Image (cartoon, rainbow, N blue to C red):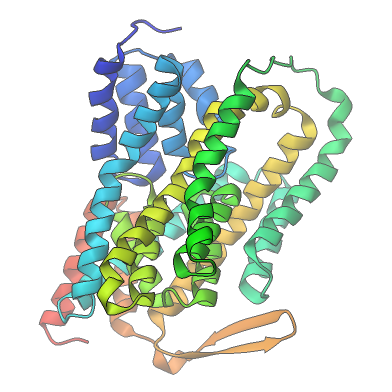
Length: 427
């Protein structure tokens, strides 16, 4: 199974290294984990790594962090999983908290504008790239394509919430999977002893801060953030880009952030190591900061960021420590497998809607929203197009798809281009 058996002390620097150098989104982080754990050290073999990756990709939440948690758990049990998962997140968490603090102080300054424009243009290209990659892997038949198109239409042109779209896709997959129920002959793995106890401890730890916020200040910004981020962590199939569609809806309803600030936060999160869902920490910090009185804004901003981080990442340990045996028991059966496949297909459509949403809010200075019942259509004003933003977005797309420039290099070029436009007087 493994060529060497490291001690926990030997593994800790490796998990920290992955957390510090984990740029490039899930693909880059998974490749880094494979190089460090499989290729360089031989702690886990290729087959085990591939099975773990398949399991993590079916879970809600950040699959790369969950894979790191699984690897640590595989080597050293629960303490190893906790160490690997926490060290994967902590470096990026500290960076995004610092960037969030800088943003609330300097985000409106003259020099910040072109920098943020370059970041947001890069985000549009990265979302389009994610859409292409995930769609290629996920949409394997006509049913999947149909679900993706339907999810895109429902998210783009109605007010139906993201969880309802995901639920409908899962129900459809469950129904379609029934046709193959009798063909399920995969061996059933026994549920590991103690799994229920571990699940209860993880669940209680995850929900405790959220319940405490509601007990101390029911209906407060911090309480609603805990409930929102916690609920999102349970249904965020399809990665960070898909989850952002729901978060954007919630942030608009509660008045936490504007669409422009959401784009700013995603751009900043793209430059940090660790999972892209660290953008949730930005939303929690900036949203709580803006909603609080001036004398407590910094404290509430920090609490909002930490609440977002805890509610988002704590469930990953629950899924790995308690959900792994259950997945081995049920995940290969036709109905659950088909339901998860349709949920993943719906996530592709949601990411497509997110790309459209980003592009509209970045490229057009104004527009109007038409609503009729559950229908809602955003119509941009074509005369209010932002030519500078359009030029930088086209540059980002060319660097990403034509030149295949690495993510950080592409971001550096788009930021430099936006700063240059400002320097020559092109607003």
